[in-house]
Each structure stands twice: as C-alpha cells, then as structure tokens.
Length: 198
Image (cartoon, rainbow, N blue to C red; front, side):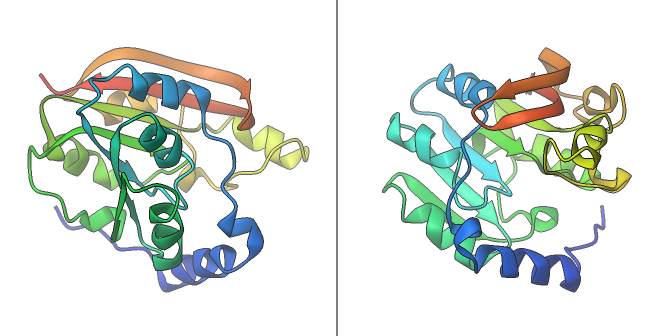
C-alpha cells in the first residue's frame, strides 16, 4: 500500500513546536493508556507511534518496560530517549515504519490519526500482540472551539462515531469505548481500543 509521508508544512509546524519549551515539556500521559500497557507482560516490547517527547514511553520505561518511540521529529525522539535508558528511539514517519513484520508485542498510539497506517500496525504485531490506541473524535471539536481543550480542528485528524473499531480490523477488539474523558492529560472526547492479533 502506498501512503503519503507527512507534508513539509506538517513537519515544519512540529519542528517549530518541539523547538520551544512547550514542545520539550511532556504533558501528562493518558491514565487509561498507561494502565493498559502496564497490564501487559513486563517483557513486552512496546512501540510508541508518534510518541513525541515520550509522555507515555517514560512512565512505562520507569515501570520496567522497554519502549521504542517513533516520531518524525529528531528533537522529539532525542528528548524522549533522554528520559530513561529503556526508552529507545527511531526517527521515522509513521507512514513508513522501520519495523519488521510480526516483531513487536505491543503498539501504542495516542492523539495521532493517519488512517492509512492501520494495516502496517497490525502487520508489525507478533501473534497475540496488542494495539492500544486512543485519539480524538469529532465531538472533541466542540471542546476546542469553546476554548476548553486543545486538539485538531479538521476531520482528517478526528474519528467519526465507531470508526476506530472498523480501522483496527482484522485485529480482535478486547475493549472499546468512545466518549468524554477527563484525567491528568485533560478533558477530551476520544475513542479508545485495545485490540489483539489472533
């Protein structure tokens, strides 16, 4: 499958963000995502797609996991790797993951949406591998427009109702939810899935 890499404008925007203090300081992780990952066996290799500065990778590494952060911004990957020795890194576009088929035990993706990569994510998981995915739905736009939250403003980066469940096929869904959540990471409308390769 041919996919489009990130545009030059997108790359420039993210490079500028990570060049500021705001980009270097990680926001709190999603409590749900961390809980799901900590429920996995301790020796599970976790791939954090579009992992930024490691807001999920860092707490998981501190809990004894090995996490590979993949992001297309070098500065972000360097910042993530500096947080803990068990955080590894790869600078790559999510649409061209440098990961062998059936080579990772778990994949995490949070607040990131590229619909074209779901087949690659499924392919990278080993047998019984787990995908933990959480990202914004179109309902989140109301929070953004009211100033109560930050997040994407276009449908390209927002899930429709029930869409995440369809995107993860043929993985087997073990847990699925959509709705408004609030934790240390903030208030947001998201869809969440835990899906397994069987």
